[in-house]
Amino acid sequence: MKKGPLILIGVGVLIALATSIGSFRWLKAQAESRVIRQETVEVAIASADIPWGTVLSRQMIKFMPYLKASLPGGYHTSAATLEGRVTIYPLKENAPIFESSLAPKDIKTGGMAAVVSPKKRAMAVRVDKVIGVSGFIFPGNRVDVLVTLTEQKEGQAAVTKTVLQNILVLASGPEVDKTGKAGEAFHR
Image (tube, rainbow, N blue to C red; front, side):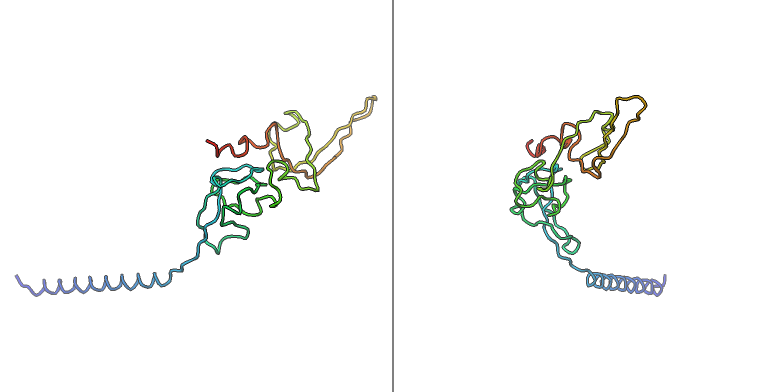
């Protein structure tokens, strides 16, 4: 058997192998030079679902890295700045805690005081399940309040008037939030 064709095939395989390794290293170097290292920031997030009106404590807060360039303003990087603050919107687990979801710093109590501004008042309106649309109205919805006046005289029709428009619902039913007492998830 002649060794000439085998040597030629062997040399061809070696050249192909060397070319493949060289090409791989060159492409890898090109890809690494294009990688942009972006700065991350440890941002405060909710460690569990937190209902609105809850006073934040350290065990309700954890941290997760986020790209600094992608974060809107108002994020927090320290648990000390959040401790004792009151939420005015419900926070979902692992959601960043932004300043816009917290009551002003001078409000230290939870509940309705955190949600209702000093220039406004909260009011309870008693309704039955039929009027309450059988559970279709939830905290955070906006409603119009109507009153129907009926005359006791024959031949007069009932008159319905709008008393309040675009009113924020703070609670629906006997509880403010279906999760129970504020912070219940943190006392297991």
